[in-house]
Image (cartoon, rainbow, N blue to C red):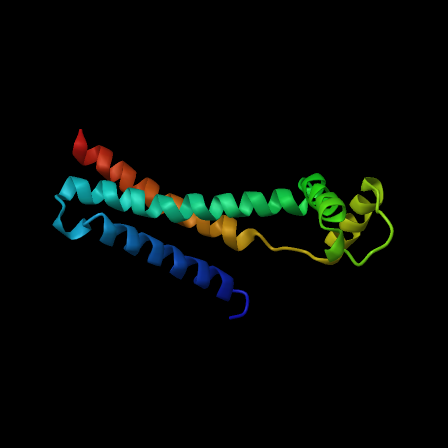
Length: 136
């Protein structure tokens, strides 16, 4: 059950996002063809949302944003010195090495996000094909 919990949580949240979108879009008062389009749009939102979070997390775990976080460190060091408790300045190379070692200790499992995005994307694709079948 422990391995299934992240998948179930993401799928339930995705369905809640879809239901909220359908409620806002007045799904129950729409015609059949518009219902198919709204269902496609509703399942596309969680798919794109999960995929975006997964890609950003994957890029961040690879160290792509180290320069950006180092610039925040420099900003804090120079412009907010009263918040800094360190006396010495860390250079970028040392900062990058330190961050890389911290990343080695922490592993992130992104497969629940990617698979949930794929799940919602496939459902959206099915409704898109149904919409195209009945629309044309």
